[in-house]
Length: 309
Image (cartoon, rainbow, N blue to C red; front, side, top):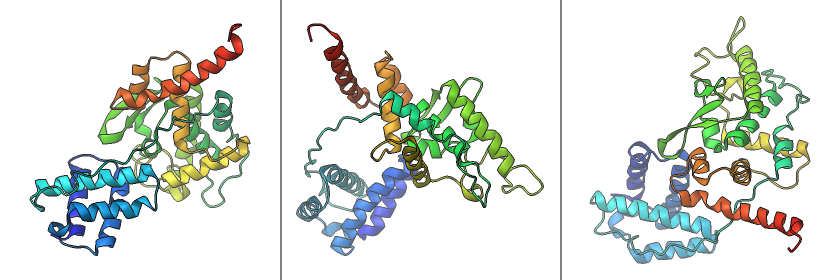
């Protein structure tokens, strides 16, 4: 079997049987696509451990250790599947060494900066000329939910109105590995969501000629131009506009709001297990990185407040 054909079969296995996210699939397929290009799509049986190590060495000169570790993980996953399917004699990726990735602590926003960011869409931005979308109404709801519920950007973009319970102030989220969880959100977030739902219904589903024909509950919660599904790229772009309006320095990505959500909960006294459930982490060790961030904060408070510090 050709390498490229095997990769497509493996990707379908990950998508259907393993429930991997589209983000993970894109990342893995990107890495293995480079493998196909480098080897000019050979037969799977002709690929050995030496050729894979040579490929990793070439990638090492181009990318950082985190990307290299992802490449190694993709190779091990694919060739393990290839061995199970009988496409190869043994697993040539089994002995690949995992590159060491330096541990990086999350960089949460300060509480005041987080509040300034989510409140930046204040209603002053003009409507989109073509669709008449109240951008600030939508963006305020998105940012309140990213910070108020600690969502991943993929989770945010996958929401539908039926996933919200404004009375209970909870949202049903489909996380990694198709694992569902219920996350609460604060009153200000509920108010922002109610404003956007009313605006969304008026713009896209009501009137003499509604722009969308399907029931509003089945369409995405956050809509873009002409009622299209809002993409992660669009969310990042709107976040950067809010960053500029809030007067914050540097590039702030959506995941920093998730980091801020977890860190501020921990500093406020929340239990680590509860934070794990809210974030949808499969392992507590993933959540424990926030304890180091919180400890740094507590040390600074101690140094400034204790008379013997």
